Length: 403
Image: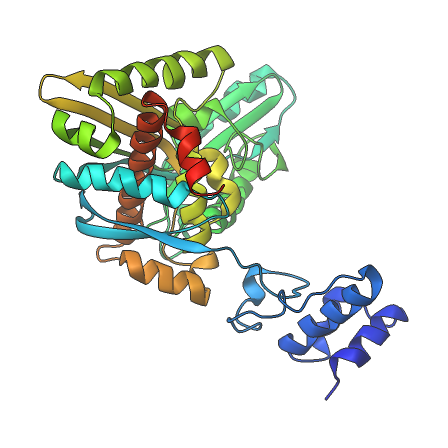
């Protein structure tokens, strides 16, 4: 059997390219050969990169030119009670991060939510999108394509759904810009995050559009989807799961757990998250929702870059007679419990901690539950940071934890 050194030599000699190694050796050997090559060419020591717990061949759908694994410390927050539509239970949530004090902060927020009896969470909307762009001759043809689309959603659904046994086309909205026509397809992808499913289904539907109208497909993604980029359309229309969580914390618990008052937290939220975000022209009116979303995505095998859409969140806070009301509404949280990185061993174990691995019964319920838990944790993070800011404890907390 070819060993790693032989493969590395063949790459150096130009006989093989880096991506061809798995055709000449098992996946572990191929990864070792790439590490050997990199160590020789860069003087790096990749011993730790080469210490990973998953099977290299099993990771093939998730990575190319594999050299090893990136290890990020993982902590856990909770348990926190979540009164959701898809789950009504106490949940732990693993978070993988290199930011010191994050897990401690979120856990403090979870403690405040638990003391109040838990958070209410609901998935308000569900729809993964893909928006191809077509070219036409002029605005007249553009209007013709838009009208045909509105009248033939059923035919487009039949074409799109012929490619999947799980996905369901729920809406198609045309947008015209001169001689460009964008069609924003929306799918219920059940427990999958669904980006690949939506892409393949939309390709089939786009071919029908080309066959029945004057439109010519230019790009299967026309950026009106919008994937992995800040976009107002996601903040307004949603993408993936639109999910909200809220809690009412009695005044004594605010003072005991968050070391401040409801009035102080409400003022901090208004001036920071609402006024400050508006002045900055932000699409996210929150303190740091992306922190919890990114850390949970790393731990749970989600598409990390989609934290961009996940940061489309609005935090509201109100000092009421009975206590502190707080909510977070995440417009475009793209999560799944099947497919993609959810099959990797570490992420499988983390999903088991939450209790949402694999397909749900009914379909989509596990991904809904995951969205409800992440939204609750994001709410906990908002409460804790706002409390720290309102009580001037933010810098001391980081200093105390040595960060």
